[in-house]
Length: 243
Image 1: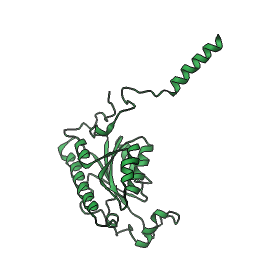
Image 2: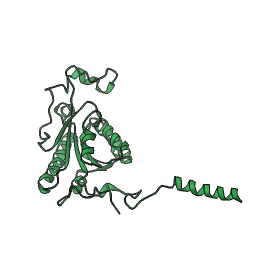
Image 3: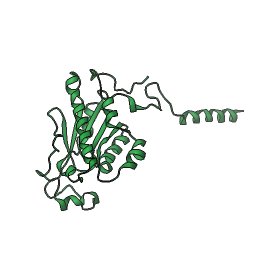
Image 4: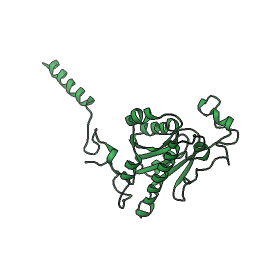
């Protein structure tokens, strides 16, 4: 009798322990794909640098990327003037190294070609024309593909209580994927603007199969549609309260 009761209780406890609990604030199946960006959203334009973009062959994809990126950046910057109380967090990464590349290990295969090309050393590569950070935006230097690695990336996000990040930039198979992985492991909501990403290799698999497992892949049109249309209260809800 007692053993039967204990077994029954054990089954109940086991069921409770392994049953996902969904609250009214964060439903397990909640989809942020169509939730407008808010005051807890940051926009990052990664490695819009002369030496990086110039290394990509001139193709229709490159022209399309630059046009899409410029359009999205202009739309984000309009938020500065259309919302008097809202200053969106807009960051620009610059990959750069000291003379002689002391930051690069001889064991790091991915960066060895930079040494022979003499790229990304001081005074050799600035921000690409049209993508220079403004006074109220945040440039930062990084030394690896991942924008968060040994940089101010997470300091910027934490200090502004950001929970949602929108990514665009150069080297989809390096910069975008590495940064996305770091954000995903830290439970951020991630959006990748496909039209504003560029690489010299085919990234179809990443956009169609891999990225959607951890981020929301959106078009330029979708990204602009998610931008706030009216005044945004910087002290308001982050968009996670979906009850």
